[in-house]
Length: 90
Image 1 (spheres, rainbow, N blue to C red):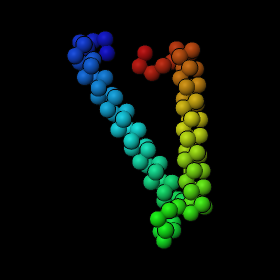
Image 2 (cartoon, rainbow, N blue to C red):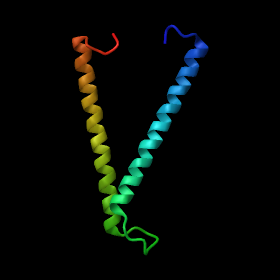
Image 3 (cartoon, one colour):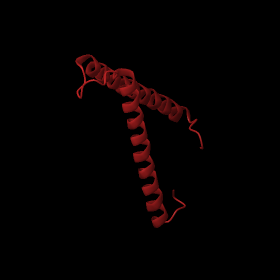
């Protein structure tokens, strides 16, 4: 990024932020769809049954915990690579 002028850096930053938002929205949409498909199967009522609501909450919780664990492992590996000087692209 150092080879870019201020305007180019700002444009790149904006593109990166938009991509992050798009990626987050895609992930969120997939989570909602996956949990809905797995948990909701009675369409005779406007509201979720207790069983369905509990299933959705467990599904979301499970996804959140797995995401946190994945992020932690990524951070650990990244720190190990930095210590050993083996970061890609350097």
